[in-house]
Length: 220
Image 1: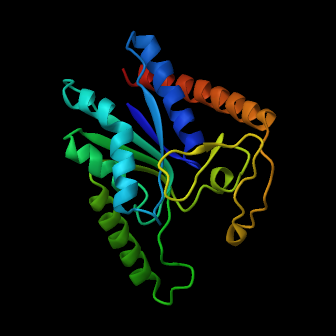
Image 2: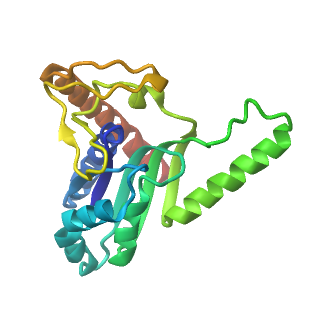
């Protein structure tokens, strides 16, 4: 199973799941199920955890009894890791092994303003390791920093997140929440925007698949 972190993690999830499905198709394997949850680092309370547990109870119960089952959690950026903790806590509860893939890792401390650069790098690495250790599983990071092309594009995702709700809402016809600190502006999301995003994701998934298969053939 692949579980994506809505809302900004939806595009990376669709891309990565597309690659996995393409590769599995060449080997005759069954494609993994793809699910989403609306991670919210500001509302990790008991009510949120209960809603999340109820949402995945049936599927996690089945996975826990399936030999060799594993979950891949996908997000766009890890900062403190708080948004993912309710989900990984449920996976740990069911004793389901999991990995985490993120495009970016964003430290809460600014290295650019540090006076002692060597200490800043040491602090950065220490905090990063602590964050990943708390999440558990193997964490795969694509880059240091925030992938702005995903996070700051209000038209890329099909959904918007509601505070305290583990299920995101469909965005078509609505306004993307304004985030003034990221220079966001409320903007109408249309089906055309979503169709374009899906087409781009599908094309990229095909390109990445071809590169992966070519490199695998070269290695053998």
